[in-house]
Image (cartoon, rainbow, N blue to C red):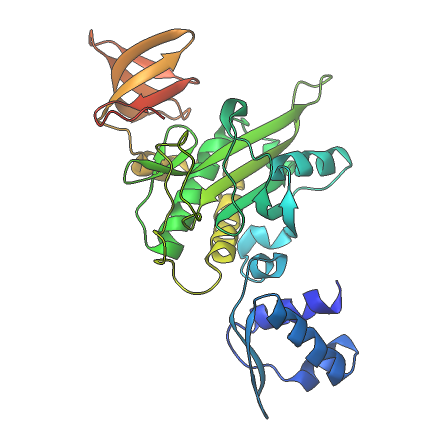
Length: 328
């Protein structure tokens, strides 16, 4: 890492405590003047750093960065190698290229904005600068003893729980991959994989999470009537909320990945569902029908009760809430 990255990581790791310029200089083998210049650069980039004589430097509030995520990781997610980019076409697309070049499990791409963000079925994902969390993670070993389709459900669970614990907001999961707040979509999961043709197993999976954390300037485009953000304009808390969300999401995701075979995530996934007991419009295998969501089974399938009383397990397809006239 460069001195800038080392200094920023040290400030984050100090978790709000002061760390002296002398200690930083000794640790990195540079002069105190070099540390001072590095801190000045970080301040110009938007990091709020307090400098107190005889105490040193303290990070008050940071901006989204690889270090902001890395310093907060815990458990199995501490193996992650996080890369931050200001602008990418798509975090999933970039990480898929890295995967084809041999990148290991745990490589993470985080971006401040995407020019060609994508969701399910090649739909575009609105990714304005500085307001959303756009993150993708590469998985390899986690796929060995479990069905890859569980990944999306596990990731949606991790995402919703991260929002709950970091923001104090009760969001729900709309089967199978969307994050909802008060019946409005605030985020979603996109899982893409590569098959090994000889074995038929998944060589790797790239799991992307897009979240509308802050309200974008000018609001959302007219073609996204159901979209919303976690915070209204001017209501976001101070500090790097996106870095905290990213770290919490990764920490929870890798805990669930270690338990995919046991499907430990399913209890929380059911509890977080915002569909159960509600009327839906279902689009499955070329059919369109109405039904009531009654359960999520142990295969992460949505169980619906049709109008004639029969129950059906949906493995794929789309569903929409119809009680409020929402079509998402």
